[in-house]
Image (cartoon, rainbow, N blue to C red):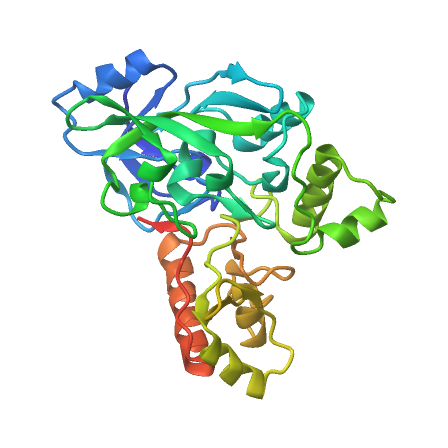
Amino acid sequence: MNIEHNVSLKPYNTFGIEVIAKHFVILPSLEDIHEVLALKDYPKKYILGGGSNILLTQDVDALVILVRIKGISIISKTDDTVLVKANAGENWHEFVLWTLEQDFGGLENLSLIPGNVGTSPIQNIGAYGIELKDVFESCEAIHLDTKTTTTFYKEDCEFGYRNSIFKQHAKGQYIITAVTFKLTTKNHKLNTNYGAILAELKAMNVREPSIQDISKAVISIRQSKLPDPKKIGNSGSFFKNPIVPKSVYLDILNQFPEAPSYPVSETEVKIPAGWLIETAGFKGKCLGNYGVHKNQALVLVNYGGASGAEILKLSEIIKLTIARIFNITIESEVNIL
């Protein structure tokens, strides 16, 4: 274990923002985590994770911790289901591909989401009609203060739309070290009705899709819409899709008859934030070295050299404009530091 000082976090966040961590350490084992937590010289600690869902707006006056514990194992298996445990440092997409190689179903719609396994429950990541909670069994987490390890089951995590206990009253209190998923081994439940999956499968000439086919379709769609963080700094979707009363949606329809929506309940609908932002005129907007992506209005981008504060200001302008035009409040999906 090697604690470094005054380290640039630019390589460790997908926005490519240049900020400095006062102290920095990469932890590849549970033993390293316990050793670091026992240190009294670094009272302030910040868990960075995969750096794919955060906008850094300032230098970090703390010990920045990157958990990089690797390993995937099968806990138990029946004729229909399997419990798979993945350690926190595993790359999310690589883990999804591993499950598909084993013909384990459940994660195919979550292909190509950036980040690591350990941060997936925090955000309750989701895409194309599937959320992490749909396949989540449990996670193991170490409390930063008590140093004790707790197993959180689904009911403990208080999952919501892009939300969990780890973003609310347990925020910043735990290091997630491993996540266990309940996946299918046969009779996979295919979800192809969201977004452009069916159209993409048709373009692929696939009539009876496998879980592997769905993954390939999702990857193709995401690559066509979302910029590669290795080429253009971004954190994927910056905003949550707002859930609003049907009455609010009906008011919008009066002015915008083409406004899309997805039913949530008998009284509420979800409106794509990307449509709201594009309709407000922000899609493709470029402000020098940052702006809104030309193919997907949900994505704010750093073309190189932008500060986190500049991107944050743009996001606030977008929120205010959406509120003025549609009377809807949209929220950031990414964490702001």
